[in-house]
Amino acid sequence: MVRAIGLLSGGLDSTLACRILKDQGVDVIAVHFSTGFCLNDHRRVIRRRKDQGKDLSNDALRAGAHLDIPVEVIDISREYFQQVLLQPKYGYGSAMNPCLDCRIFMLRKAKDLMAEYDAQFVFTGEVLDQRPMSQHFRALQTVERESGLEGLLLRPLSAKLLPPTIPEKMGWVDREKLLGIRGRSRKVQMALAEKYGIVDYPQPAGGCCVLVDPNFARRLQDYLLHRPTEVMDLRDILLLKVGRHFRLHEGLKLIVGREEAENNFLRLRFPDRIRLQTVGVQGPVAILDGEVRAEEDLLLAARITARYADKTSDSAVVPVAVHSPAGWVRTWEVPPAEETLVKSLHVG
Image (cartoon, rainbow, N blue to C red; front, side, top):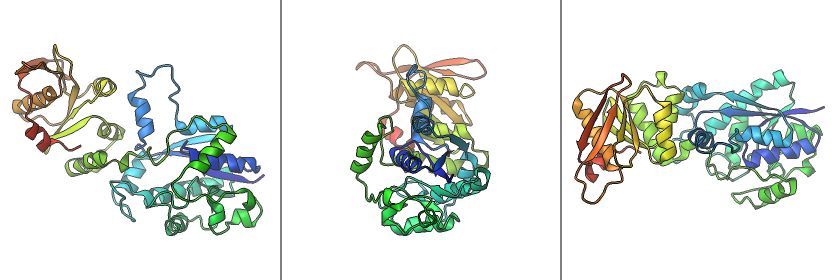
């Protein structure tokens, strides 16, 4: 039996690619590479307590279960950060998204797995011209060449628009049963999903990668300016995805929750940080990340926290409690920070 390794994000395109090849009798082994920058995974972590009872499993695992194919989830976050994100050979997209380097890196990893799984080729759910940076014809050729998979990388959704691959030439797959989809429209994919009974898939258009978000890009750039990258860990990445971020000074940042789920996340996941919270008035949870040098740092953080409280019209000050991991609590009544001050410190 012919065996192939497929990159499965859990999105519609990669799910369809797996289904198309499985229908041709290919033994599909799916791999999902976790970079730490998937927005859908982060939303599940943030909302886990709020959405108890709902299916919050990884999108790729859910798709694999639906298709009845094995899925291996591989954490590449540390390698990805150091080897791809910091110095991408092909640069960034509109924000901090190293799309070409990302694809190349993952496909090299998939190539390394071919011998372990006795697989004959690798495939993806990429669609020609769907994404401007990484899926035009030349980019697809570059990815294939740089990954070391020349002739062995099949894109079932656009195969009829691309040069025949070795799997097609060898008769491992029937080229006539592959597709010729091109562009950003998802009408063909959605029609196929309905045909195959695939109903539970995340919204398309690249929504999973938080690196394309301009706000996140600003936070990440700020982080890289003020923290040594060699000590970055998963919690640092998670924190960059949450709330409003304010740079108080070069060694200290304030993160203010924007909603109940984020407030709970900050309170429960970062008990080792100084926490600020309004008292007697509904408001956000905020935490400090870095070194507090003086009491003025705490007062400034309290004023910014107060800025986002639900204040009554005649309130001149807002009580804000500062909780230390050491156990002490101090409460100040502070005037909310002025809009101009907030904007000057805001980094995303």
